[in-house]
Amino acid sequence: MNRAKLSDIVGIINKIAPPALAEEWDNVGLQVGDTSAEIGRIMVALDPGLPAIDAAIQSSCQLLLSHHPFIFKPLKRITSGDETGRLIQKSIRGGLAVLSLHTNYDTAANGVNDLLARALGLEKLSPLRIVKREELLKLVVYIPETHLDAVMAELLQYGVMQGHYDECSFRAAGIGTFRPLDGAAPFIGTSGKRESVAESRFEILLPKTGLQPALKALYKVHPYDEPAFDIVPLLNEGELAGIGRIGLLPAPVAVREFAVQVKQRLSAASVRVVGDLDRQTAKVALCGGSGMSLLHEAVRAGADTFVTGDIKYHEAREAEALGITLIDAGHFATEQLMVAGLATRLGLELKKRKFDAEVLQCSLETDPFVTL
Ligand SMILES: [Zn+2]
View 1: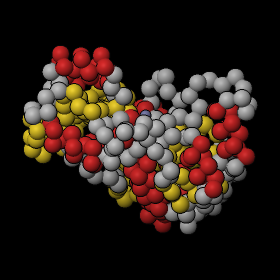
View 2: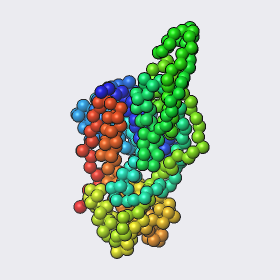
View 3: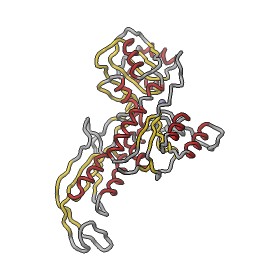
View 4: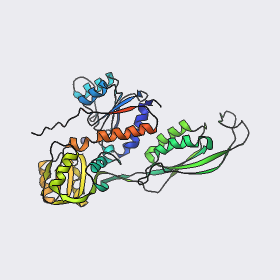
């Protein structure tokens, strides 16, 4: 097992939720921390507030991974005069780094909105508002047969998923030649003499955002001091990435019944419904957190129900006029499921890379709204 550095965890999180998917106004990524620090324990939380920071420090975590950004507005000072300043000082004193995801994790495949859609039993999902298509490239690496398994195992972690398949690659055997010159530190061969080595040409599709981490990993595991590789731009189109999701229920149900299912499946204290409770619903759009800016996309996409949080009075009136049912399950309940989802995913990614860091889920967070 290896000890993970903060920079390793940042690399893994950037793969799970590529920063390029974040909205322009957002502030995602490492907010506080030393990238060379060793990380043995990580806590995942929705909000980087006092309960999560206290819980993380008390549980001897070196990293808090939060969904909402720790630092959102630009800071002019870090003092005890405001909450953010106090929390930043507390986390630094406690040796706690803070890494935040947000709209990148809302948008990413298997992020907040996919977790929410699956929790509600939706099938045949697609994004509600397309943000971008992932740009793809092909990495071709020449690997001596002696190191094929080790280099492949490392690079396969960075490949794109193709439908429901991961670890997709191609390889063919061949002979590589080279002649070490003065100043070379050859892994095989002697200076001035041409060498022929049994090598494999290994090909893998990568997201453009995954190239730098993959090359860094390649230099770490490839035995040659000058590994040979090609970076090939492609015209193939990657997966569509977008905010919100729309999908189908396995069978139509009455809005009343679906609303109760939403409440139970998200462990929400209550849900508010706008529209006819006896109407049937089958095509459901959703967006975790505050999603009402997607109302018109939901209507255009043909959704009969839209599940989100933070719905205001006039927005409810607009939905009535548009003829779409709204279910407000609250900001907290529509996003809190990211804690378990991200902790599980990160745990698997750490295990794949043989890092011994442990991932905890913050259990102290509660909905700030109490329903009487
Ligand atoms: Zn949120």
